Length: 223
Image (cartoon, rainbow, N blue to C red; front, side, top):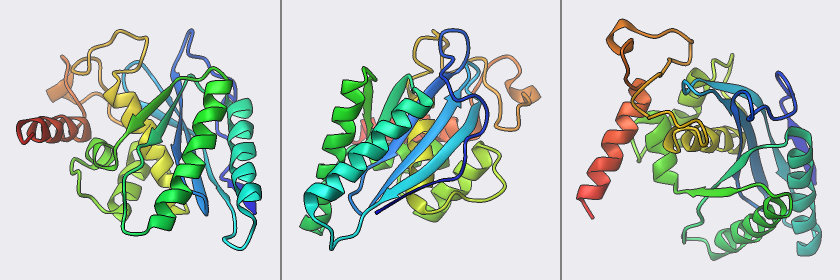
């Protein structure tokens, strides 16, 4: 069993009362559970804080594996004190064992957040992909590349579970309109580089946010 982190960047404690919203994204899994922490400013600029994974071996006892994921989650909660947790909604997949393992991890992660008084938000894989890439059918490589660009990182977070967790955090920050700020999604937006293009100087969305909004509207029309 193992837990890896890329290392914290910036302040550890949450500053939501007078600054950005701290979001902990979790990509649940029993073999690898991804964690990603992002500070989302009121102008929708996302700042990388930390990312990593907690891993277990299939040969280990189930109770020990679940406990390791729970302890890892508690450590992330205590270290970074997020204002909200965003987790991927579990869907049926081809492998029943994968679904069950993901459900085990999701359960202890959600329970740990609830115990710490941290609100939990669920997002589907397609919602997350559309939020960061503009396409709900994007592959993991595309998600990783966009997360790297949005957070202005030097390289794609590894393993992919960590990148997916960061994508969840970004998705929640953009989709929720940054909880508590009262800022409309269409105003006060900056690119991940921090500059406001002239075409959006009076209010607008980043290209990824616009693509996500269009994808969501198409999805609603198709229901």
